[in-house]
Each structure stands twice: as C-alpha cells, then as structure tokens.
Length: 85
Image: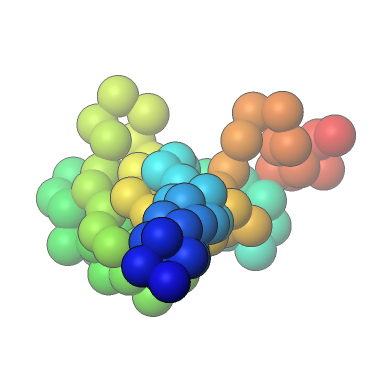
C-alpha cells in the first residue's frame, strides 16, 4: 500500500513538472511579450498567465517566465508573430 501511494505521488509530481515549462511569454498575436527595463511588468504578466515569476530578459527585450503552461510559451519553431508560419 505504501509503495502504491509513493508511486502515485511520484507520478503526479512528474506530470506536474511536464505540464509547465520556462520560456518567453507569448501574446495573443503569437509574438513575444516585449519589455524595456525592470522586472515588475514581466513578473505580473507571467503570474497572470499561470507562471510562478518572470523577468525582463535584457538581451532579447522580452519577458522570460518560469513554470508557464506550454500553450503560453513562445517558441521559434511555432512562431506565428506578424503572420509568420
């Protein structure tokens, strides 16, 4: 019984870990969410999208979020920003 409980808890933790990832926050138009300086805007935007926290990546001037749902993450491969496919 203890083994079954341990396996159930382990599996649920693994599934939770796979459900959320880190990455750039995607806007409704498919583009990355831009930022200039400071982390407050990105932190609030990431949390409202389901992430745990966020900051402004000064190299790309885009919000980087931790623990975002996969459908909120911008990826180069799935970039539809400005009508790209």
